[in-house]
Image 1 (cartoon, rainbow, N blue to C red):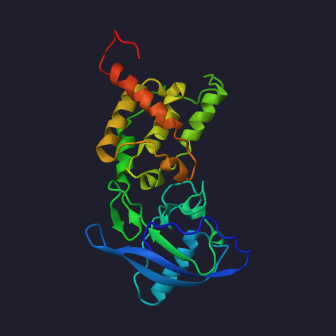
Image 2: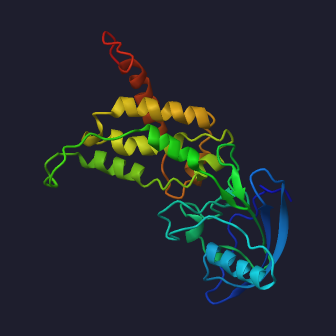
Image 3: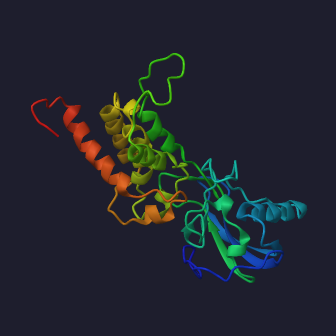
Amino acid sequence: MTATEPLSDSPAPAAPGRTLNLTLRVWRQAGPDAPGAFEDYDAPGISVDMSFLEMLDVVNERLVEQSREPITFDHDCREGICGTCSLMINGRPHGPQRGTATCQLHMRKFADGDTIVIEPWRAEAFPVVRDLAVDRAAFDRIVEAGGYITVNAGSAPDANLIPIPKSVADAAFDAAACIGCGACVAACPNGAAQLFTSAKLAHLNLLPQGQAERYKRTEAMVDTMEELFGSCTNHGECEAACPKEIPIDFIALLNKDYLRAKLKNRRYLSRKP
């Protein structure tokens, strides 16, 4: 079995209250520059009502009781909001259930006797820190490049002061759902971050409040992205892996705005975008 070989798509859901006896094949790596390898762990008596991260908690408790090194993995809110959890499960970012972050994946999606392969995100821009934890600071560099939004300071304006069509507001809201987990990069064969960057741009560029710095922001964020990540070739794996199911339509908007930004920011005033 290879590290990224997906197992069966959808095992029969386990009945509530049942337990599973599993084998975990986990990537262990002591540090960024240390060699890594898979290690197997028996995980008997796992409740089907546990989340995937709760299952790892149980495994780690058992390892500590045996005076063995626990498995390092990223986690925080465990509600599918913060984007901290980042595991490749059986070759799929976040596991077999679409539109679901690792922390929301429950063990009922697996079958008794399964071998579950668990790896960190595999992308050059996300170096391994230890075991399953990776450094996603490259995403921060993209967001930092976007700068700020000009606003009039003061009391909160009335809700309907700036009319925004519902379709525009809905699209911006869909883009803002991005939690920055990095599944799109891990799934992409090129290690591209176009889906992440396009979502972060669209939720600002679609709204009136984001127009003042729209093209400056677009050029800066895309140029930074291209320095750190691979290039998009429209495989569409990012959309399939995204736990918030953000569509690749936003990448088309990014490309359109980037072209306009290159024209406007170079002061080609005689040329219309």
